[in-house]
Image 1 (cartoon, rainbow, N blue to C red):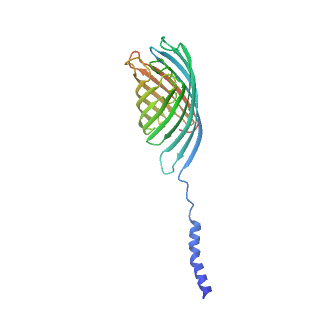
Image 2: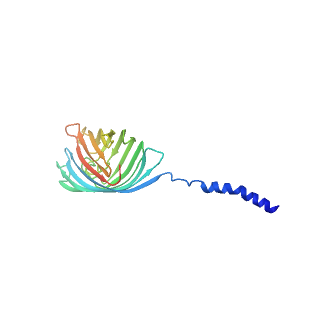
Image 3: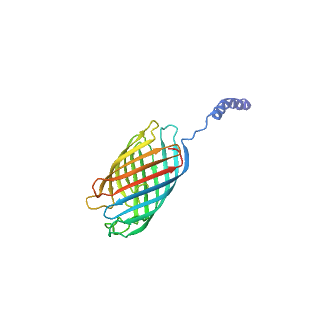
Length: 245
């Protein structure tokens, strides 16, 4: 009797064990892509009544991109460092005749489908834009915020972003569209810019930026335009290599 009971239990358990063996293994919820990105920057500007400046530098960043199989977008986490150097030349006697500029900018950034943000700090001899052009800036916060899809319409708020911490930082508030060209690689941005140092009632200007994303990087050109006759201006260019966009 005991032998028959044991045999019956064995026969009943065999199909269950076979079903458990055939169960598929759980799949990964996302994949990750880690790349190193190298950037080159250049900027030049003029502050009427105070000085003109020019600087160039490099950037190095590590980007971690998460790809979700059930989503139509990626999420990026970036940790990076920018370094740069240049020269400031006085236009009047209100500042030192000429002296070097230099700065370092550690930063962190997070970018998703509809929102993105970056935060860092510029440290160095950044430009004589404190105390009405009498003292150099030593520490400046760097920030970037985006609302909306990069490949569509989106709003942007930045201060001392990218290479803008050297010379004369601008606060920028604008709108952009990133879906131009058949592949949606071209982005155009326009808005208002408020300079850190300017003559009285000359602080507000306008800016425009164009950026092109490619398979191995991106590049762009930006221009700060004074609205008032004695407003500050700035021009810059950047190129970033590494990873798809």
